[in-house]
Image 1 (spheres, rainbow, N blue to C red):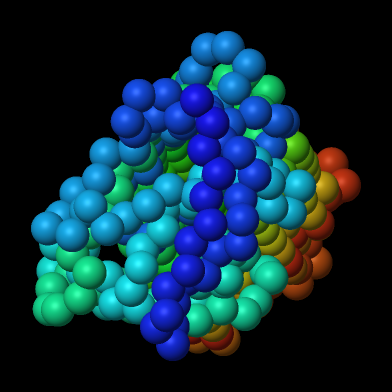
Image 2 (cartoon, rainbow, N blue to C red):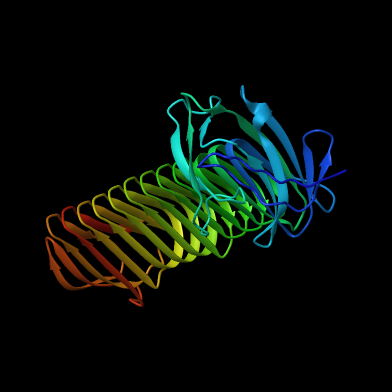
Length: 371
């Protein structure tokens, strides 16, 4: 059975959809979408992405709320992807199954899409209480191997499990949990925690406010960025690892990369079993503790205020320059050759002297010692 949808609403902030390309409806609430790229749009609810069988993406829709019957489904090709859009015919949506304190506004375009870089659209507010269209939709998206899937969700919760495909989530206010993916993963939320585990592919995780946990990742590039929240990196292997937090700590264990860049505006940096050729740590205010598992080419640490402690392996070799504005500097490594040593400053070499270590802190001691 095929379904073609044209939707119009007379209100000023209406969601007006042009005629959509046909989408196959199976039973009452199940849709099939073909093509190598699929995008799903839903303003409120839980979206779960799992591995599917066959050549098509299957989307199962469960509507909820007192006004669930007013929701409608639109399908069709937009921007190079086959899409499914849950359409909310109001500019105020009440999602009572979510957080009661929820209050987020997004711009919904005339074709029913939202978020992303296209811009435009009418303002639609999603709240956890009050008056408005009391409705949401929970979706299960079954994705076959090799089909790229993009989920756009204004508010709610996102989950993905056991995929063999590239995956992206773009949300305004939602926590996202992803596990067991062979493919690239991109997560972007305005507010909410992000958890990613057991991924063979590149990972990009960005939240305006919320914790980021990345564990069991193997790819060429890994990026974690939070405006306010902690970052944890565990059992990670990548060519380049970047982690940033405006306010919060960065911690990790068993991290292997060619290049590691860690930056926190306010919060400590602490990583154990770190193996990387090039390492850079920058914190405006916070201690830095690194347990190196291998020799380095370059290590740069800059802390506005906080102690710095580096433990090194037996074969470690580098030229060292350590400078503390207000704190004791200590180097206790075999084969140390001193060029200049003061209470708050040290310059010299250890081991073969081939790498380079530069550490500076405005306030706090500096220590370099064996593991």
